Image (cartoon, helix red, strand yellow):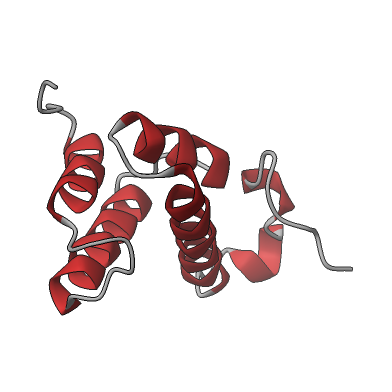
Length: 104
């Protein structure tokens, strides 16, 4: 498998390729995962949990673990977005594609 040149893809590739088992038991696993989420956020990638899950599976993560980690990813992205100064003015439904539920 070829190493991705895109920084965001590389961060995900690194997390999947270097993780310690299926439980993300090592602190380094969570550190790599958090760095991936922050990289996606700062690079303004529009990936939702389905995009991330598909990429994780393509890099060799078992589907069940990919689903779980994609949900964690989405929760982190939502938390980062809610902290934004734009949330009060614009809401957040516009940046969601398939995932999430708009609160009324």
